[in-house]
Image (cartoon, helix red, strand yellow):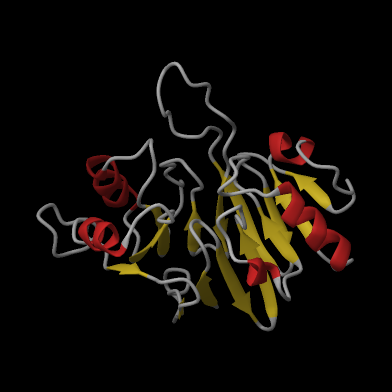
Length: 221
């Protein structure tokens, strides 16, 4: 499997010629969906979900299918035979990738601000994209995507979350509002060498950069 970082929270997974894209939102480059037949959307916020972009991709590619929560599915006029509603506890196959859904709600921004539904996705028992929540799957995770920056997050919570999940490696996402200095500063806290080590090596990808995630535990990468 190869993981390619796109803008902000969006990544693309590719294996055996199949492409699965997660959270191609309003801060994501237009080419993120190129060649993809599967899309996962964690929640409805604009930086994770663009109704116009997704509708255009569905119209351009008759093979494309989407898996997301009910709130997102209601937010755009998608073909119900190609837009699948999933929630916590569901397991399904998306364009050849085995996916399990975890979590129910977006992290709290403030008590005065209503929370929206959010579902995280564990792909092929190895890569976990949490969306905007610090959900802890009940199974081992090898590659954890960390939402490193947002109005709801603080570095202390991220460190404790990585320690609880215990991944073999972590990769930063949700960084579209950070400049390079901010990304470096947060990265210094989120790996094995920081003042409060997380226990997992940390990688910060730039848009378009690719890495090969480690496979499920007990298998080669």
